[in-house]
Length: 258
Image (tube, rainbow, N blue to C red; front, side, top):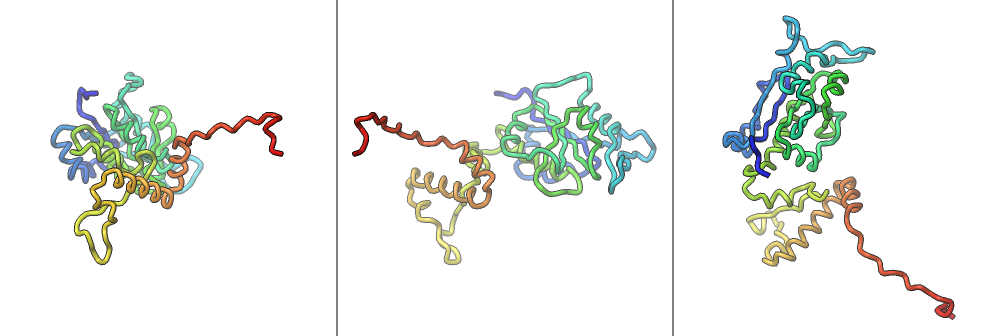
């Protein structure tokens, strides 16, 4: 399917100067300069209602830290997605938080297939839940750890999406052999020199036999997944077709073993 307009990432943040950051380099940077995708930033503080541009308040119920106000954040969201617009196809609204759904390669592919992704970068102890629910945000986490804010997580999400856009990566075939395709980690790679510090390249990779190479790589990918990511391995094993079992022979009265 041909895109009518470039894939667009709109980032709502308290630190717009952090962008584009690393997204202006390497594949993502070259693709943005080529017009394959667009980056927009919105400063959430622009929607604060006081002279101090306050965006946070102490949490109800007590506790450490501060919480991002729902009215300020909702106003920022509404500036890029008017409430009257309703649900729009091709639009994803993401809130980055450690308590969100895991960011998987499957989810990245869905986001890359969208026309536009709006990413809200959390800060402080979190965001008022009412803003998340009222604006229909999907909470996503990039891992089981805590960052100072959602900006670095937003860059990781955007980079993962951009490299899947048509025309960004030269060899599209390579994308199908990466980690997490089919719930497997990627096989190990080797290049010149053939021998280095007493370590040699596996002989099969030098054989020129493409079928043997594919078999070796598949086995290496499965072994790495089994050893390092048992959660992925369980999912892969559950989805793998099981070999058909031959039917058990039917025994009549005369077929009893005597």
